[in-house]
Image (cartoon, rainbow, N blue to C red; front, side):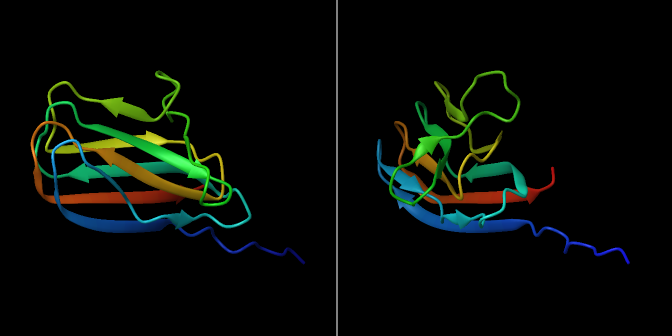
Length: 126
């Protein structure tokens, strides 16, 4: 008899931050990937006002206290963090999770946000 494991579940969280002041920071909701490392790809999306100097990064933590930047999924920059001299109204980035808990962190640039939204998705088996 063959015993099948249940299919892994994709996890996602949408965080409507709303207004965010110049140079202020915000984080997405934290996703708990559980004890098994089935989630192999993270996607983060920022939507809001293009703000020169803004920065987004994807972070992971074993305990929700000590956060480190995740490795870039493409492997071209080493870390999943990007700063934009010229801001973008929408940006999507990818990373590889290293620990159980993951989140997206955003630091605003030189233009205040009015309706910032941060979204984070963990894909299983990707």
